Length: 122
Image (cartoon, rainbow, N blue to C red):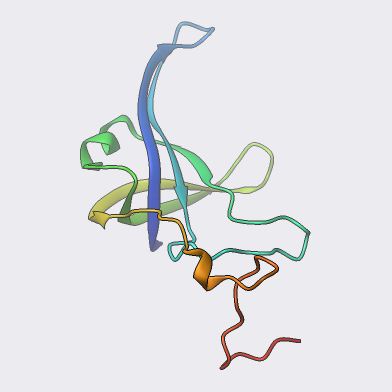
């Protein structure tokens, strides 16, 4: 499965677990929401929570910059808890991203985003 992501952070780890086995990988944090539009979710939460994943140690070599937009290829498996787990198996850098403030002029007096006239609000 391929999709674009905003990669926020990547860091390699190389350690020994409690049984003496060597464990290596790359820890990544990213957004699936690449347009970064403010979100009011039906469960009452606000915004987009970054996804966190572990991938192969050598994936770090494909990461040029962060935060940045990447084409990501994922594999899916089932975790020990029976839930699906997405794992990044390949990345291709597209471009840098920049998160910038929205000017106050784009908000109404209640400091809520102005509604676009072409959209119905119910």
